[in-house]
Length: 478
Length: 160
Image (cartoon, each protein chain N blue to C red):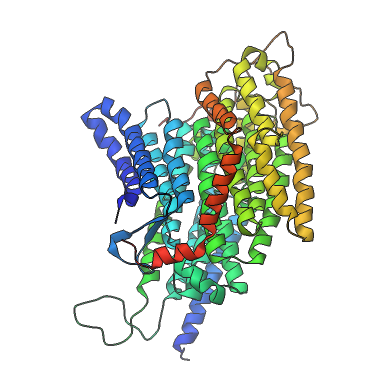
């Protein structure tokens, strides 16, 4: 046992302590949640520093895997685990509401667990916990439309859970194990068959609900349009990436089959095309961003379908780009949540916000010096390295859809800077400071791109090293 | 007529797949929200049954240690532990769904998912200040200022 369990346990515990703390002192309750998050982030940073970038494991309750539950944190898992409390801290709601604080703490605890757990059923439990926290947060704007959107989200998410459970059952009947490392040993024998593929499809669609995967993403637009914008930012940026990380692990460790990758490629391509086309048609900013988020995650699924480390690097690049950009864009949408037509000339009155939007739009489309270009380039190079008709179709698809993406984003940028006499935009206080922070991060990553690329390649190498994962997890940790 | 144990397990497995199928079809075709939630419950029950069956053995005893070593084989305890967890999660999710349904009924006065979809679309559009997509050929139309939503929608019911 080591301190790896604390970043999961502390927020879960704190979530239920927010209300009692309020009874002691309301000032204390206000700072209680953020303090716990800072502590978690500190603990995770400490683990990252002391482990010298080597993977760390922890056996829960002292039971050795494969029977016991194991937490496994390599650099990628630590990165995502660190992102959860940090982003929750940045996007902490301004209005102090105990129930919302508790839900965000719940989200952080389960999200961190999702990033570092190495047991399939444990992952399912964390995923469900995350779902419930998200559902509560979406409903927290307390409007009728938010309730209706939340219930539809709950039904789709519940259906996804049933599918994931069926997938887990199929895996268990075939192998008799749920430990990911143990499964990676058993998979080539027991899961390289149609039933194994069916299990993968069930797990993919089940867990894909949060990752806005194509057939189960009907909830996205209405939830992002009705939820508080900071919650949308958390869902679109952090939660979707956590689901992606979970699927990435499953793909690498358990279902490393060409058929599985083909399913990913096809679903990703459909998601990309449908998302970006819907965004092109959208007439309000929140829903445009929601649909474009479906498109971005479709791109991510395409990246995941590329075999080998190249695919991993592409997936990580697209995922981190998405992680940085989507929350920032939703923060800007907090300011401009009306119809797109109403935004004419808004950029002249708020030049900083419009400048940031332009920057993000350029990076989203992939204009050369910006990191978005590099992410797309790595993706396309990875696709081009394979010689299958499907991969080539995907290249054509990605390039074509980029044109659509560029069209609707630049149309909006143009609109922001048009000259109008009367400007009907209600001036809402958006969070420019935070959005600027993301913008600065994006710009700062530009000169660092070569270093970042090396870092990602190294990280991908560590993640792809299934043998090391197995040896460390099953070979008796502390 | 007697059933051999393996037959029974086959029947149960078929039953669980059937439950999942009924639940899925129910989710696809039902309109009333309560029916949808019940369909989800059925599908969950099917998945849980399937999970129990994954570790079930006809000739084995319950996996409870009472001190003395058991006489025969034991049923695999892991799926049973998993099913307990999954049942608890399912109950929680259904309770949450019903709580949301009460809020929706109070706000919109209907529990029909198709009506709700239309109302939801209209509300989102009204909030953003655009007309719903049925009139897509007139995108520049602006609703006259001060257009109020019908009373039952405007009142949120009890606010939390």
